[in-house]
Amino acid sequence: MDDRAKSLLKTLVEIYIAEGTPVGSRTLSRASALELSPATIRNVMADLEELGLIASPHTSAGRIPTARGYRVFVDTMLTARPFDMDVNVAREQLQPDQPQRVIVHAAQVLSQLSNFVGVITAPKKPTVFRHIEFLRLGERRVLVILVSPDGDVQNRVIVTAHDHTSTELVEATNFVNAHYAGLTLDAVRERLKQEVESLRGEIATLMQAAVQMGGQAEEQSEPVVVSGERNLLAVQDFKHDMGSLRRMFDLFEQKTQLMRLLDVSSRAEGVRIFIGGESGVVPVEELSVVSAPYEVDGQVVGTLGVIGPTRMKYDRMIQIVDITSRLVSNALSAPR
Image 1 (spheres, rainbow, N blue to C red):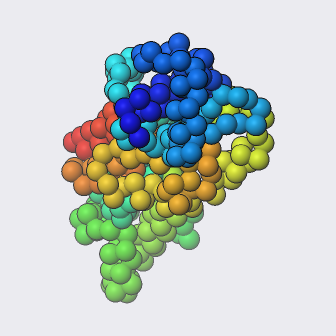
Image 2: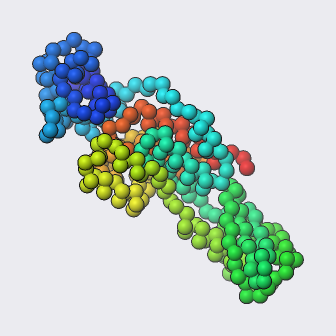
Image 3: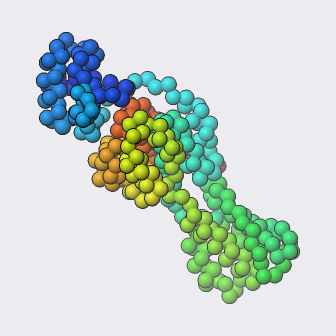
């Protein structure tokens, strides 16, 4: 592909992303910096079509980029433009806090800034006890509070077989924190199996309740958080294509394919872009994914990104994803 063809492809993709309608030779002739006649431009467009970089919709004489055309554009022609992103607003929403709240807010920030769908995988790590507390609420009713090292708090009311005084619960709290704090859920389970005979009855019962609570929280934690699916209903490209919309909403509901795609993304450094079905994981030709890994204390623990139509402002999406990734990494790595 010579420089003239590259220049026309770049111009065509930029016009189509901005306007959303097929681009004709006259439009290209006016917009291109090259002084070429519409007839010459038509010949170049025919060459680009033969290369599989642009295509002609049935309803128009103009051309639109194919997934392959977008890929060439993104890889070789994309120019970063200043983007007025209010980083402070995003930073305020991603304050160091409970990790699960940071994850949920990150998906929302991605969706709000892109006007598409924001996705993020939750960091995978074993549940560890930092502190456990048992509080008496009433006869045979005890509030169990479980705090993890990174500040996640879980609490649940349990009903015990026997009534416990506040003093007994304070003693149980002190004993458990002295002997079990800092252990993972699995390690606590193993020790309980071995030590259940030697532990005082009420402590063993309360500990088993705490372990069961932590296990249920692990099972219920959402592996992928998705925000802004309804934004796709407003995308011009999908308004008359219910089949595509149905496939997309199935994708967000099932989440298995999303998990696989984001897992692939986490193995590479920096921002990755998947256009159409080229990932081999998400079989929706009309979608593109811009993603980046995020870290906790220098270790990659998850991936976040934006999902939208192939006709998206890639330069802007790259900046949104890159900045959000850094903000999430900072929020989750901040000392608590």
